[in-house]
Each structure stands twice: as C-alpha cells, then as structure tokens.
Amino acid sequence: MYELFKNLGAWLVDGDQWAGPDGIGHRLAEHLQYSLLATLIAAVIALPLGLLIGHTGRGAFLAINLSSFGRALPTVGLVVLVFLASGLSMWPVYIALVALAVPSIVTNTYAGMSAVDPEVKDAARGQGMRGHQVLFQVELPLAMPLIMTGLRLALIQVVATATIAAYVSFGGLGRYVFDGLAQRDLVQVLGGAVLVAVVAVVLDLALSALQRALFRHRPAKSA
Amino acid sequence: MTIDWSWISEHTSDLTTLTLSHLQAALSAVVLGLVISLPLAVVAHRVKPLRGFLLGFSNVLFTIPSIAVFVLLLPVSGLTRTTTVIGLTIYTLVVLLRNTVEGLDSVPAKTKEAAKAMGTRPLRTLLTVELPLALPVIMAGVRIATVMAISLVSVATYIGDGGLGQLFTDGFQRNFPTPVIAGVVLTLLLALAADAVLVAVQYVLTPWTRRRRSA
Image (cartoon, rainbow over all chains, first blue to last red):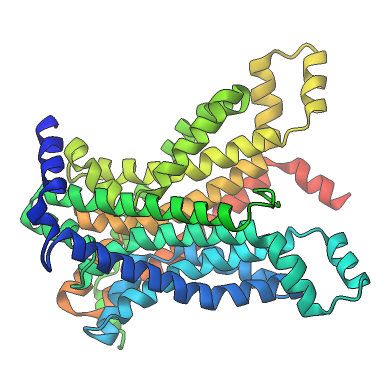
C-alpha cells in the first residue's frame, strides 16, 4: 500500500509524464476542453428553460421529472449508444455530457426562481415593472445563488464523467484510467483518477470563489 | 440503428440475471448507506460542532468521480462486488446524510418538548417521535439515493462488475447497439419501478400525512 502511494507520487511529479501529446499537460487541457464546453452548451440550453419555467410557473412538472429522469439515465450507456450511432466523432462525448448537465441546471434554476418571495415580485409589478424587468432585475438576482449551485453541481458531474470519453477512444484524463486498466498498471489508473478528482474540486472551488466575488453583497442562500 | 428483437428474445434469461444483479448492487448500497448515515445524522443533528464537519466531508466525497472511487478502492477490495457496493455507498451517503439531518431538523421543538414533558426518555423520543416525523424528508433522500445508485451501477462495468452496465461494454466491443439499448431501457425501468415502490412504502409508513391531507 505504502509502495503504491510512493509510486503514485513519483508518477504525478515526473517531468516526462507531463510533457508531450500523451503527457498530463495535454490530457488535462483536453479534459478541461470537454468539460467546460459541455457545461457551457448545457447552460445555454438549460438556463433559459429554467428561467422560463420559473418565471411563468408553467412546466414545473416537466422540470421535476426531467431531474429524476436525468438522474436515472446511465451515462456510460448513453455514450456508447451515441458512439455506435454516430461513429468516430466527438458527438457521443458532448451529447452525453450535455444530457448529464442539463437536468441539474434546469431544476436548480427553477428551484431558485420558485424560492423568490411572491410579495417581492408583486411589489416589483406594483412599481410598474414589466415582465422582463421583474425577471432580469428582481427574480434572476435573487435566484442567483441556487442557479450557481446548479452550475457547480453540473460542472462537477461533467468533469467526473468526461473520464468516459477515453472509453470511446478519445483523450482527456480518462486515458490514464482506461489505458492503466488495460495494462494492469494500477499506478497509472490511480494517477488518472486522482487528477480527475483534483480538477473537479479545484473547478468547484474556483466557481464558488467567482460566485462570492460577483455576488458579495447578497446572502449566501436565498432559499 | 435498429433493434435486433431476436437477440432480445434469445437473451431474456441473461437480461433477467443482469437486472437482478444490478438491483442487488444498488439496494445493498442504499441499505448500507442508511445504516451508516442514520447514526451519523443523529450525531450531526445533536452535536452542532460536528454538523458542519460531517456534511462538509460528505460533500467532498461527492466531488470524487464515480469511476475514480471504484478505481481507488481496487487496492483495498479488488475486482469484486464489494468494490461496487462500497463505491456506490459512498455516493448514497451524501444524499442520505443531508436529508436525514434536514428531516430531524424539521421536527417541531414543541413536539420534542411535549415528549420530554410526558417523561419519554431521549432514545425513545428519537425512535418513536423524531424519526417517524422526519420520515417524509428521509424518504425523499432514499428515493434520490436509490435512483442515483441504480444509474451508477453501470459505471462499475469498468472494474468487471456493473450489472446491466456489462451490456454497454458488450455492445461497444461488438459494435452492436441492441444490448446497449436494452441496458439503457432496463436501467430506466428499474429506476422507475424502484422509485414507485419507495413511494408506496412511504405511503404505508406515514399514514398521518394522508389524514392531514384529506382533512
């Protein structure tokens, strides 16, 4: 056990391991590219949807069921299925990752919007605010903490799951996990797994710092 | 992409075996998660200084990717069902712990005071007053944890287990979509069925919430 962790440490700090197209530096960049792009696409789809459902109060049933459907959907199966349907392209990875991220963002955005005090919305309308003004100047700022929670949750899930890209022959940090499993090289597998976990935690901390910097004047939780 | 129905009819017994194995892994994890999280939640609820630590620690566990959890467990328990169940349990803990603590928090202070005034001892209060009243929130956690565990079992296919997840590996290696589609559909159906059973269990266990609604 001790020997294993010593080898793992040596693997992680080895300069050769970080360089070149198979190096950690390149794999890390690939992993970040998959994760950030997928989360961004998911946010572009999910944020307007969540805001619309929250603002109009219609489709709440859809939001709730979408979240449990999303939780139940096996990502590995989805990646393989899209891979078999589309052949060798980046589609399977992005479709699966976006499908994973959308429910978390929609449901948290909706939850944040529905937690906004109705009296505050009434007051805003009473002052003569239009629908879109209420949405963007009152509801959205108040719902922001929960929306950010949804984005953070989605990003963690996506970073963790982007590992699967390597299973269908793409890059990213999952390469080490799957190559290591195939070569029975436990140090490499553990190295890949540790790196993915570190990326997930660091990105989550970064988003939480960004959230604090942007919304400092507001309480941490609106709900 | 077409479904080869003859493959499905030829493999019904395999599909049944895999579905049962899948369910067994997920249920073991949820039961184990409950056994661990219940006492921890009681501690987190009663000892305020430990509360932040326990909830924070379980949140950190959640950020570790599932495939990484399984792989990190390999030196401990190897390519076995035990690894699958331990890995899944770690995931259920986050949801179960948070919901159980929230459930215990939601019990009105007056109800606890009334139990105390009637001379009920703390342990008895916990078992007969607090836990039953916290049950709706705890059950909401159990439902989320169960659906999540059922979906995650297939990740364990990379360490040679994974129940229905094995169909994904099989279909991928043979470039044959039918097992993959069957695996995805069966996983979704299993999650749906388990959730429906849990709703029924909660309905039976909490008759007072029904009476309140009908009154």
